[in-house]
Length: 81
Image 1 (tube, rainbow, N blue to C red):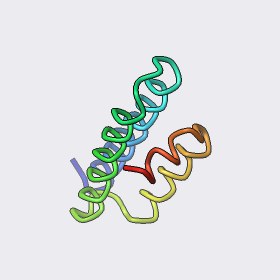
Image 2: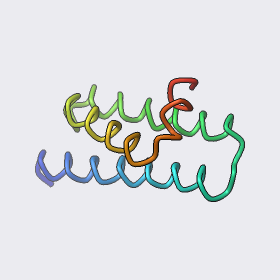
Image 3: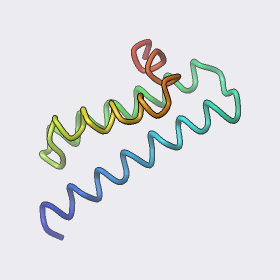
Image 4: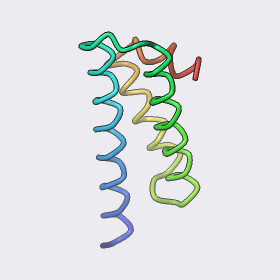
C-alpha cells in the first residue's frame, strides 16, 4: 500500500469513528462521560496518526472540524475529555 493509500485509509477510519461516536451520542443517550472517553481515545489516535505521518495535522484538523460542524454536540464533550 502506498503512503497516500495509507493516508486515505486512515482518514476514512477517523471519519467513520467520529461519525459512529456522534450517532451513539445522538441516538442512544449514552452518558456524556462515556462519549467523552471515546472522543478522547479518538483524539489520541488522531495525534498518533499525525505523529506517524499517516495523515497531516491539517487533514486531522479538517476532519475534526467537519465532524464538529456536522455534530455540534461532540465539540463540548471533546473539549471536556
